[in-house]
Length: 124
Image (cartoon, rainbow, N blue to C red; front, top):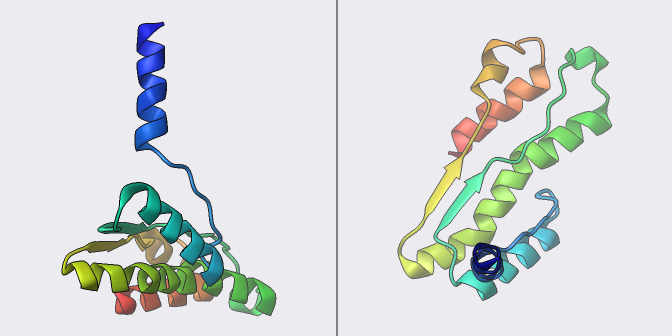
């Protein structure tokens, strides 16, 4: 019982669960603001959100292309933009972008996915 109450105290004081659609700038700003209020200035961000769609370009609907672009590319850019000002003010910070190298090797038929991953590489 003692261990459980200690764990709950740590859980409540050191962890915060937040969720946002990274393609929605307002949601990202709200999540970053909440995290900064809870923990202080953000000094590390890991951009790892992504969705997958493996299909030939000719079979990919425009709406699906936009969904992939908005989440996988624009989401990374929005999140980075949101935390960058604070990091520049602190004169420190680390932004880690996790892409999908496997997309370039395995899913070579997915032009949209390859384009997004190459764009992320250039952004980084």
